[in-house]
Amino acid sequence: MAEHQEVGHRVAYWRTRRGMTRKHFADLVDRSVSWVEKVEAGDRRLVRLPMIQKVAEALQVDWRILVDESEAEEATRLPDAAEIQAIKTALARYEMQSQPSGLDGAPDLGSLAQHVEYVQEAFLASDFAVVGTALPKLIRDCQHAVRLHRGADRCEAASLLVMVYKVTSSTLHKFGSHELAWLAADRAVLTADIAGDPVSLARAARCAGRALMSNGLPGEALDLIKRTTARLESTVATASRELLCLVGMMCLAGEIAAAREGDADTAKTMHDKADAVADRLGVDFNDRTTAFGKANVALHRVSSLVRLGDGRAALVLAESLNTAALARLPRERRVNHLLDVAQAHRQCGDAGRAVAALREADATAPQEIRRRPVARDLIAELSATTTDPEVSSRLRQLAANAGLSL
Image (cartoon, rainbow, N blue to C red; front, side, top):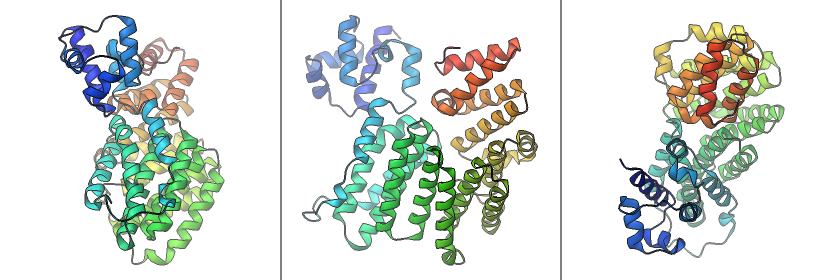
């Protein structure tokens, strides 16, 4: 395909991703709709740098994304600055505090639930460009639904909004926006009170615990998780599978929080509680939304051992895991495990195997490795300490993929 056609296709992609009509985009760049159509079809070349920069500014992207193949490919995989800003703006709305004028225009809850499920699936598949594009509107729509609906429908809308806030917080964490992720988690906790059901409470508490940990407050995260678990204790005996999964995931979050505090005993206690919940659900059970089950419980044990600094024990456990069960987990969860394995190898002084785990993770979900701060930091740290030429060469390739200069 000719280069000008590639540029035209990128213009069309970003215009669509920004939700612009051709008329709106044409107005922004002071051109006709016909001009836009010809550029996007590749019938008109976009070659002069001032015009490329003007088009890029209208699309809210760096101009290199339009003309450089590697930059363009990387940018399509992730939430970008404009989408993060749109998420921030959506989180800053306080629409639910205003008085509704009536039920006219209230979003259909069935349709809204489908959109929420779609975004959750995209997150679990590590398709963060889809997540980043969809979240701002989905946040607004769910907020609008909570404001306009009444009674049981309002509770259902609030439950959907808690799920959206959870995905928002988790996505922001992955790309280093920890304070903004905390804001999303805080919104989830407040909205869970409106939902008024144990499932929303557990989901919000888990989300807030993760946010507290990412902002350097693992002790406070553990305290929140313990208090919420105690609050839900009376409901666990008759709990649905959905609630059991969320209680189990809360316990796993507590395990990681305790490990970050260096409290091995509490980490093991929280792990055992999660394991008991997994036993109750069955050896082969694997929840589609939370990925909770025996396999995920085992992965969290590996993760907590890494955070306790016991890389050797983490690797022994990792090598004993059921590979078939791991393969059934979402890509996002598998890549997190590979990052933990890489960290464990680094702790044991084996840079070669650490790099092998990173390369496997990069092949599984490039978005997770090439833009997440935790992965980029590990690449940089290994590069600074390894002396093996072959390992260094592989690290340079990983660094180049991640846009790092070593």
